[in-house]
Length: 414
Image (cartoon, rainbow, N blue to C red; front, side, top):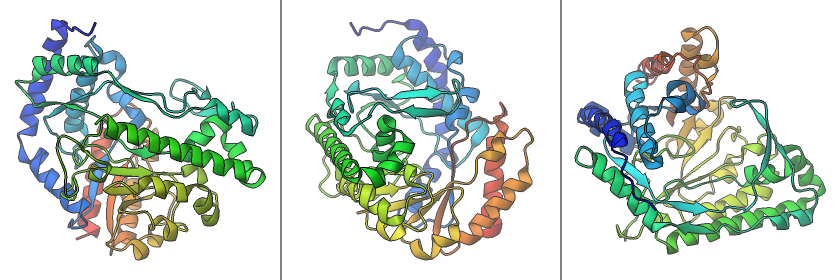
């Protein structure tokens, strides 16, 4: 069933893998950047790191229709290889261009057993959640996550890619590497954002019951990952949800066994950006206490996304093994620096808007970055360009942004 013999896919992948191998051989694209990330993530870096993730703009940089491979695993590998080539050609930020290719294990997760309903404005437009939970008893429609692993499919996928390019680049079979939890997002998926905000006042017991259900469900899911030995290390180029990449010498934890990765060996993260306008007290009561419970087993953690956490730091800093704290575009960095100091990384996300405007305005970008870096002096910060859902089909804007960021760092930080 899983026998792959598409020789054309192999012909497509081989020159891409060869090109990546050549780029990765340059220490400036690989080892030096990795060492900088390790120092940075261990709070020992000498200057801010710069990370660009094109998000929705990938559809402009690498349209799905431009991929040539037919086999699903080959198509996923082609996408990753081409993205690295694009990153090298246009972005050139601090993300290492490494040669290893990971084949994901064929893992299925039922999550909550019910598909959310969303109304979209277009293929790439905004959407709103259509509530399918009308009364408290409707939550019983949801079910606990069930994790299964198709080992034959995993082995077939790995064998196919290893045979295609394994002589050119290292190929490995990996399990779950992303551990980020979104309790309030899930709530809104089924109940709607407006209803959530009313529920905090009108149905507080229901909100707590659902948060407990989600928390216990995630715990069950993590136990299944552990029992089936599906966890893989993420102290590498894996994107860490709150901010940058995961390179660190602090993970895995003491007692590590390569044949069985534990939660204490990996990064975790959580966020509740739907609570942006909710008070610190209610944030703590209705979601943060549950998130801390979920993050406790992890070796290192990050917290936050697109919500201003400046008034909520006292409770956020109670998260065990916390390393990264998100600073969203509309938060005042000056409120974070004196609290976090050099004990945590401020994951600052400058406004992505300049890349989406009709006219590129480098002066605006320069002003924002210099001002933010000035406010961050005395702390540890990384510049994360995310939520760039369009670059106006001009990929050079990413590289221009990186150049401005590096110049601002040189002018302000040193």
